[in-house]
Length: 197
Image 1 (cartoon, helix red, strand yellow):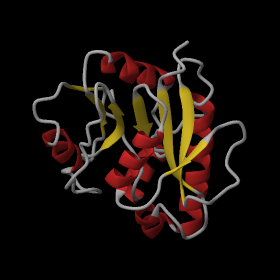
Image 2: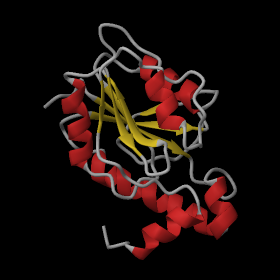
Image 3: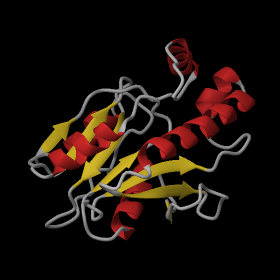
């Protein structure tokens, strides 16, 4: 058991008209809300109770809920995605941290285990997304914390490349590529291959 390994599931509180705006634009606000609720539930069920790591919910808005019982929450704080990931990573107890979103249908406990394993020999690890972003980022945080998120063009095909460029001279590893569901096209691809969880 490696309870000093921290998994953070980033999530916005599921609420009609808040969050998943690009998806809502394509499939409607109610459809986006249903998808968001389903994905948060599935990802928590798949990942949160694994004894190899401590799972946290990185939540926004900071004062929101109710969230799934039995899991500690940590507020994301203010700022862009990078600033919020830095805020959460700095607040956690010692140990490597892996941060994932709540919109990655294909994520599995093996992916999280692989991320922590490769962090043993690397400063950072990424799970590339097929749109040029990433579905996972892991940081070793020792001997000191490295902030790789400055000047990243979020929600663009450059997000991963920008973040990796900030880690020049550091050891960086990549996991398998997965799809995240951000818009109608990715939602339709997901639905077309959906199988019961």
